Image (cartoon, rainbow, N blue to C red; front, side, top):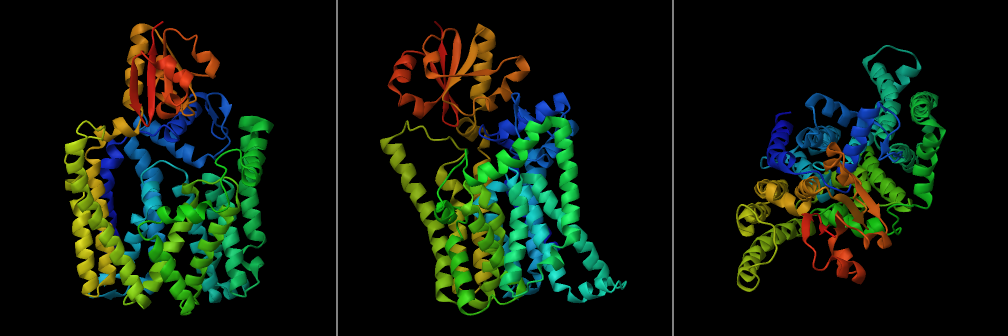
Length: 545
C-alpha cells in the first residue's frame, strides 16, 4: 500500500501544474461543458443537447459527475474535472492491475520491484498518460471494464465458492462468489453507462473468448440468468428515463444511430481496418516494442498458460480485433486494451529480464531519451542562429533545460541495465518522463496561447462588445464549442457557407488558419484585413466594412 501511495503522490505532483493551468480544448472539452451547462439550465438528466441538437452520442454518467462538480464549485474547474473524471480512474485502473498481478510481480530483484516497473510502464504509455489528464469518457469506461474482468477473474478462480454457493452453504468463499456474481453485471452496466456499446461488448466478449480458449464452455455459469436479468433491468430503467426525458426519437438515436449505424458504417471517425495496427506504435510508446516482444516470448516459451496471463492476453487481442472491425475509430478508443497489453508483458518480465532483446529494447528507449536531449541543444543553437524569429512556444527555460531529466533518466537506465536491475531501468525512465512533463507544464500559461483558443476568444469577445460586431465562422467544426466563451454575454458564432462569407460586414470571422489560407477566394478576402491567431490553429479576421 505504501508503494502504491508513493507512486500515486509522485505522479500526481508531476501532473498537478498541467491539471491546474491548462485550458479546455476546443474539440471535445468545450463541447462537453456546453452540454453540461444546457442540462443544468433546462433540468435534463437523461437526454442531452448541444445547441438544441440532441447529443445521444454518450450516456449520462460522465455528464452527471461534471454537473455535480459545477454545482459544488460554482463553475467549471479544470483541476476538479481532470482529477475526478480522468486522473482518479487512471489510478483505480493501476490499483486493479496491481492487485490482479500482485502474486506474480510482488517479487523484487536487488530492491527493484517488478510491480513498480509495471505500474510505471502503464502510467507512462502515451495514450494512458493523455487519458489521465484530458477530459474524455474513455478512462471512466476503461475503469469499469477492468473492474468487470477482475471480478470475473475472481469468480473463475473461486471454484470452491462456486460449489458452495450452488449448495447454498454460508462460507466466506460462497459469500464472496455471490457478491462477485452481483457485481459483474453492475460493473458491465456502469461501463455501458459511461461510454456506450463498447462498455458491454468488451467485457462480455473477453469473458467468452477466454473461456473458449481455456476449453471451459460453461459460459452460462458466469453470464447466466442473474447476469442478464440485472443488466437488462438496469438498462431498461435507464432507457425508460431517456424516453421520458427525450422522447422516442432521442431513444432511437441513442440505441440505433449511435451504436449500430456508427459501428457498421460510421458517419464519424471512419477509418480502415488497419488503423490500430499502425497507431498502436505511438499509442503504447515508449514501451510498444517491449510489450509485443515480451508477449511473443512468453507465448513461445509457454509462460502464458496461467489463467491470469491468458485472460489478459485474450482481453487485449479481443478488444483490439473488436475495435478494428468497428467502422468508427480514433486512437483514444483503444484505451481499454492498453492495461492488458502492458501487464501481459510485465508478467513476462521476471522470466526474461536477462534476455538480450529485452535489455536492448529498454536500452533503446533510454538512448532515444538521451538523443532527444542532445538534439534539443543543437536545435536551439540552429534556431537562434538561422531563425531567431521562429514562432516557437515560449517556455520558462530553454528546451534543453526542460529535457535534462529524460537525459539523466536515460543514463541512469543504462547503468541499471548494466547492473542487471531491469525493473529499476524501466522505472527510472518513466519517472524521468514525469519530471520532464512537470518542468514543461510550468509554462502552461504560455503554451495555452498556442494549444487552446481561450485567449483569442476573449480578445474577440472584447472586440465584438466594443464595436457591436457579430461572430461568424467558416469551415470550422469546433466553432459551436467555442460559444462557451461567448454565451454569457448573449453572443454565439454563426456557421456560414462559403458564399455567405463575402458579403459580411461588421463581423469577426473565425477560420481554421492553414486550411482557409489554401482557399484562394478566402485568402484574397482576408488579405488587407486584420488577422489574429487564437491558438489551436484557429484565427479570426476582423471585417469592418
